[in-house]
Length: 237
Image (cartoon, rainbow, N blue to C red; front, top):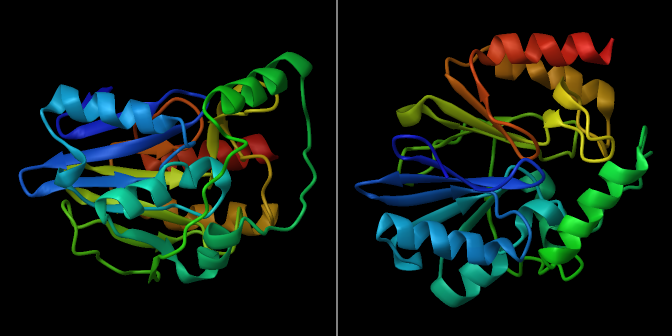
């Protein structure tokens, strides 16, 4: 799905990842669930591209609904996978602390788990090899993505700023659709390790100049990152 010239989304409001298509090749941000491999192939065909055009995959964090097809892409096509050093272990093993689920409504929660099941979400393929990154890194990939540390949801959660398309991918630093309640609009993401730290990290997002803020769950936000950060804070009370 094209959001803007060169900027595409894979998946939907339940789980999504993003594709930047440039003359120098493709950069992916996040890899959704394993079954999103087919979505990736369809989007590549629509663009007249193949996996050989993908230069790198950047993870916003190491949770299973974001690493999806990453290991398959790395193993079958040699695409390097980038993750913050503080989340490298999580991306390799799936190990993470238990967090309170918080509010939940039966039908939306079942819908999320059913969607994850359909997309092979119970068959997570963890990474066997990653390239570790740090706050402030500008990656040598199409679009020159910039790593912005936003800990809280996980220790190594990052935003990935794509300045060439005025977009920032935020993973689960926030959400615009709560996967367990179905409630839409800017709000903190569930399953967050340290909610207070995650809210504090929104200060980093508010500093950015961008016209798109792209969460891992929910509708893309077409507007100011500062306004979105303020709306999430307001929702958190």
